[in-house]
Image (tube, rainbow, N blue to C red; front, side):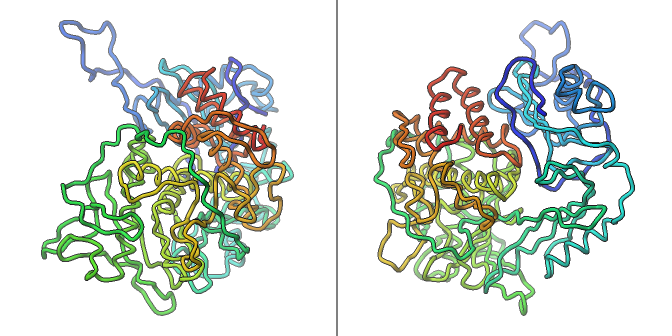
Length: 608
């Protein structure tokens, strides 16, 4: 059953979050934050009552007065709803929501002045795995709508004793993981809703090894849901996004589309970031001449670290580490004269220059186009490791940083291209916002958002750097480097089936278990919806036409807003349609052409 706002709204999206979270077994109830002065006052006039200082866009500190006030407003709103859905939510108990039923996770204010409160659902002091409520407050601080889909939980699942201990559940997961980890495993008691719709007492165990890769070893960040009474493995999946599916499928070559960009000469919003100096003398492999900046060391050398963007942008050498013999995991990248990519430089530095430029450009794209300060909204440092593994033909986000393989020289060259950098860093953005689970439709949305923002980074760079050519194909600069065709790629957003495996319509979606339920395969469906939204055109399967696209920049803003505020960890395609529609209404108006085109583009790919 669904929690709704008082006035009719779009259907709310369902939530199952898998991001690690420390569960505070406390009530949500906060007293109203006391008002205090600190805001500039009109000349010669004193406000009749104290004013709460304005909060800039971005994450709001959870212990701040503004955050507490927004949380309290949300709780009050939920408690005041005497609708059947809420009374059913609390079946067998009170007809109103208890303050202990939700624990605040994050509060964020956006550029429109709206505030979004994301809360985990609790039952008897235990977190309900992934279920969340997200309230959306207007400029006046009133609840505009609420996102969330919850069902009745049987009493006793949170407080009743379990036959298994946390250590027992960990042992079950360790047996399946069958290898060493590179970080401490975590185990949390949760209430888990299985595929059969039934809630069970369970343990959520996370185990990972993202360091020992290459030579047939893939990075893993495994999530295990273990029944707390029987020890049965209820579910398991790998929360590991990479640009390539990595499952050995015969991936045919996608072709670059003929470019018919709606706004070929339109510049990104406020492209204010310029090179730190007038010189543009650093050389990349994929993006021509650039200026990447650096940090000067005490010995007169320079390190590949830029401290001018947020918390910094740094690229390191992962040394093609052999996990069986090498203990050192990375080292810094340095240069003698601060001219990077020269023919006389260490050949290993070439990939690092591209990775650094890719991360810097992605940071600038987030700031200038999406209005976001790095992946966490607070300037989080972006770290990239190159030369990961041996002949490793993939790139991935490991929860903390980007990792780029050298490729195998056959299917892949070096994976440090601009669109792949944007793709991988966006996995981090998704993890810090919607937290989309990497399986089934939510996983396909996770991959699609990375593809969308990856081509967005390439488009953004093409407006500032003449050596960068924008297209709708992902990974074309690195894929099959020796076949003589510079136009093939991993995925083609304008024509997903051209890769031989990706559908462009929901009726043709992959329904199997490979590729975590088709996260790379089915990403073609939302990818094509985004292309049609931006460019217009016909879907090849349905023949449905979007007559006029709204341009890539508006499309990027809409999908990014939906990602940050209206998607949740198990958002499916239909809910993504709702989320992007609501985001377009926020940005451009309830009856805007942009909002209507969002619906047209999803309908064209069979998502209704």
